[in-house]
Length: 276
Image (cartoon, rainbow, N blue to C red):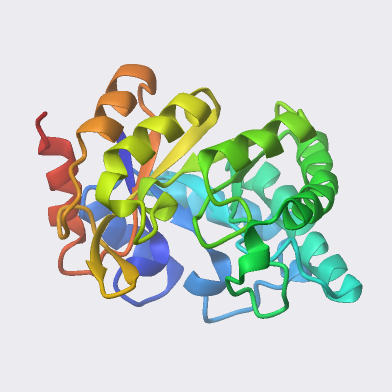
């Protein structure tokens, strides 16, 4: 495993400072969300120039770090056509940028059929799924042109809420440039969390061959919510997912999520030392 971290979870500072800290904590790659990480200059579409991509590529090379995922987590099911066009253009800009940055994967979640990007019962309908597929298709076509992977991340509270829905998206779009970011905790709801290992096993069966990046976190149930935290700080057992990773995904890039500056390094070691 190549274990990384979301760069915006590292102690606040410039991107240069954060990359240095992440490396010192033993991480080898990062999930980079530009708007959450870069605060001292613009990261609008027009700022994502070849020059900026080259600068960042050299910065990460200096610390022997890779960018596992360039995150662009926007709502591709937005109901306003004008806003949807802006969102798609944002993905196009990220894909173009990634091709120069040396980052192979642009990642996204799968939205909701409303402007607020919030879960409603309609999120889990076939109609919403088809809207998402329609709006994702030109983004994947752009990924093909730039030779970059577009990876979707199933999340229970979004349109693509389980592995079967994700498989539908993969099959309908049918592109070698559309892949999966597998985040086991994101597949959980309060209702299915009691048998979470079965949920994870089913996701591996359905999506394992398409999985290019893994996100790792932990969880506890608080009332009617699944509350996530850094790996090793909740109730999750990692036997199923780590057995899959070690057996079938050699050297896969795995980024931890929901860590804090004071537990990130501990969490990395927890995964590295985990025995099953």
